[in-house]
View 1 (spheres, rainbow, N blue to C red):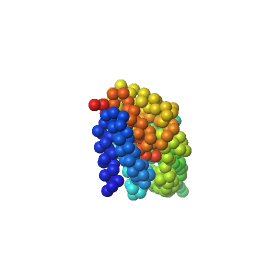
View 2: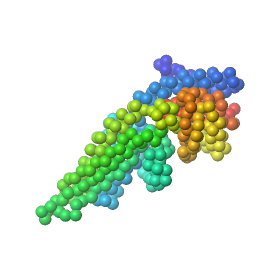
View 3: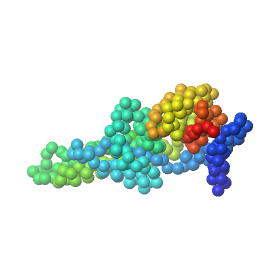
View 4: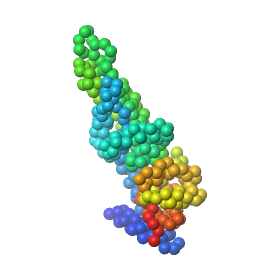
Length: 297
């Protein structure tokens, strides 16, 4: 209860706005108190995962059996999933983006746009053998399943897995389906513990990769985007090499090299907000800072 009370008081103080330098210092102190609890919570909470699996039975027939299997295993492990219907509606666009941006970086950018902590991408293909066995209707079906789990806040690959399975079957559709499920079961069984272990270990802001992701919401106009970008670039004592990764539906995502701790970066954002805007810090966690901009009073 004391932790919840401190968070509420922190957000209340941030929303009140900065009225003079002394008032700004008080706001920063409230943000830091709330952020410390938020970072600790992120270290223990399960990740939110997005699935992006190109899956085909008989070599060309689209299916989603392996995706359903992976989703079931993730949910059983207490992992939250991004809405797959929303993902499927823009699958082609995201595939193109991953090709343009490079696999790990592209996966991270796509995952961030959907609010995912981890993006699991991969392929699953099943094909029948050319010949039937002993002049019967029985033949073998072979499936290959590959997964890659990428952490979106720093584009670090947490796990890569490839599994192949062969099964016997009479019917083409059911035989291919059985092969996909067999290979998928093996692949997710190997990937899941590696992925969750990598998530639990985390990456502290300013260490290992030397990168921090900054997500700014409320950026619904170009002048706000320019103002936020300018404020981050001016933070010379806190950030270096600021780059915008994406901008979509009012959410701007930046990447930078931090020179100070994440909580200190959040403090500077509150004390030195973008021109004509006010900053509300939403979350400070391993490798990521989330904040919202609102018009200054």
